[in-house]
Image (cartoon, rainbow, N blue to C red; front, side, top):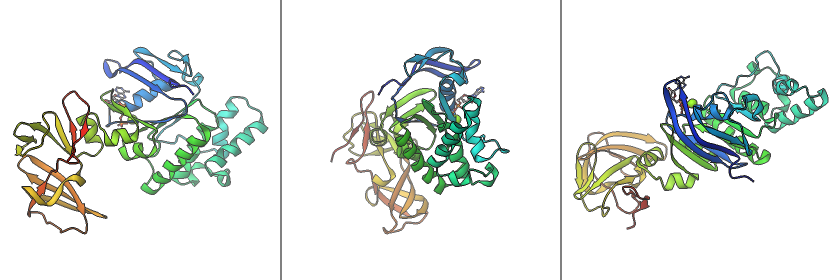
Length: 346
Ligand SMILES: Nc1ncnc2c1ncn2[C@@H]1O[C@H](COP(=O)(O)OP(=O)(O)OP(=O)(O)O)[C@@H](O)[C@H]1O
Ligand SMILES: [Mg+2]
């Protein structure tokens, strides 16, 4: 197994004068499912287009399976592509959609039939082989689109937000499906999403991007529990992030005096870590929402907004109520200036 199955080396990508990715270095392991995650416009699709060969890099190199493919045309790179829009042929049956690429390769009919049947089976669509895409549900079309790429036996499968057209329940189903397919086929997959929950659920490793630069690269556990920067912490649900000063912590409106025992940088709390109903600080409830098993509060305090959640069984506060709260040091995530983040102890 190669640790550099797909290797992007000092890749810089631009549309005309607009530089999107300044200089990207990324090694993707053979057989892993890696997620590119980041806000809209950070360069995820652009990076995928470069790997696929749909756009030439300004500078830098791309290696796939040890071969420099920087100048290799898209159709010679051994890459499969699944995009958000399924791009299925509407006039062809499911069978013929999957067979299309194989026929282009001039494969003989028996081989095509056997591969297509296997391909449709893998995604649970064998019984719909004769249907046209329009006669299939969104999830079925999505699986058909996957199957069509898989039968080509690509070295690398690139998936650009393939689940974003599906409703919540189908998305969950397809996530599981994708993971299973990945384990069974062992194909290296690069998966683009801007949904952190999806990346956390699916990926062996996550690449968090910001403005074309890798902000952090690691396992789901590392990114979720040990964000390396304010940006990463914010992206992974630390909704309360404040600068630490001698006097206490500083928000966008003011400061909160207290002993936070952190010398510099920022302190971050997830909404669930904020104590509501008791504590040394006082704020006003300006928002409350019921979300299943918990209640979400927005509390306006001296330093700005605090986001908090409490179990739905706890006392309920209404908009306009004055409420005591605490930002306990134990459990806060500390992001010191220029050093690794740490979890604050009691
Ligand atoms: N054809 C193009 N010409 C000029 N600029 C482009 C072109 N395509 C994309 N861009 C710009 O490049 C940047 C990166 O776009 P890209 O599509 O890679 O973002 P993304 O991370 O995939 O975002 P999203 O999550 O919205 O899909 C954006 O600022 C975008 O406006
Ligand atoms: Mg995109």
